[in-house]
Length: 119
Image (tube, rainbow, N blue to C red; front, side, top):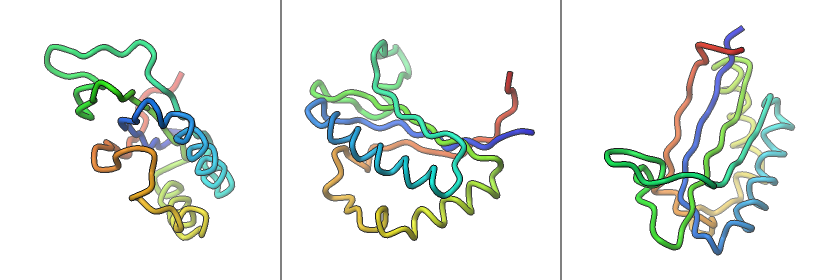
C-alpha cells in the first residue's frame, strides 16, 4: 500500500538548533499522538551548495544557518488530511506563534508526496 509523506526543508540559525530540536520533539509527539506513522527531523551534515540547485540554495541559506530536512509519514493522503486537521486544532500546536519560531518560516519549503517505490 502506497503511503503519503509530507516533506519539509527549512533554514535554522545554527544558534537555534537546540530550540528547534525541542520544538520538533514537542510537535512530533502531537503528530504521532494523532496517528502519524513516522516523524523524522534531520540536521544537515554533508550538504554542499550546488552549481544550479541544492538544499542550501533552496532556503537561501545564510552563513550562520544550517538546513533541516524532515518528513512525516501517513497511511494515505486522506489519513494525512485527517491527522493534520486534528494536529492544527490541538492547543499545543495552535498556540505556537510563528513570530517566535526558532527558524524563518517564510523560507520553509514543504509539500505532500505519494510514494511510488517502497522497498
